[in-house]
Image (cartoon, rainbow, N blue to C red; front, side, top):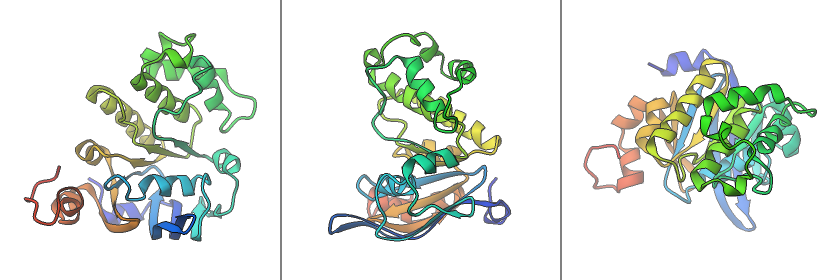
Length: 252
């Protein structure tokens, strides 16, 4: 079981401090502090529109920061270009099965290998087909011919094949059957055992807490609470976020 004590014994990989993010004049992330340690599975929980996806996109450099700092492996990446952040080992799988629909499944996977290796690496394909056999069966098909759920699996595999140091998954459960969701989260947990850190945004609270080492609860762009899965389950914040202040003492 993860505790705050053994969490602090791991080196910090991602350190977000005082982060503010705005779209135009509308600020949606207000002074957020989070940390992800090496080989740790961290989950961001909160309602839709709370700012979770915006936080991930700010970390990966896809949207600018208004204030605050982002450090990765001890280096300030607050103003670093997204391509350089990716090459440092931060890979984000965007929400909504974002794949190149005009390319084949295998070409999409090959694009994922360029995240860390500018020349690509076909030797990594076999491992992805082992993890996700439905992709092996369709390797020569155009991604446009996949179902929405299959495209989401391809998007996750495209992130995994890049061998990230930090893999950020934004709602990977979208459009997938429960068994497939569980398999994706198991793959993520196995990556943690190999030293990869995971930062997950997910609406399926029970599934996320099953695999998490540590959780942050996001409320309207702020951190409303944090702790281990057991601490989160026992606390009042998660019930307030998902069920309202008068909700019964059960976790959704």
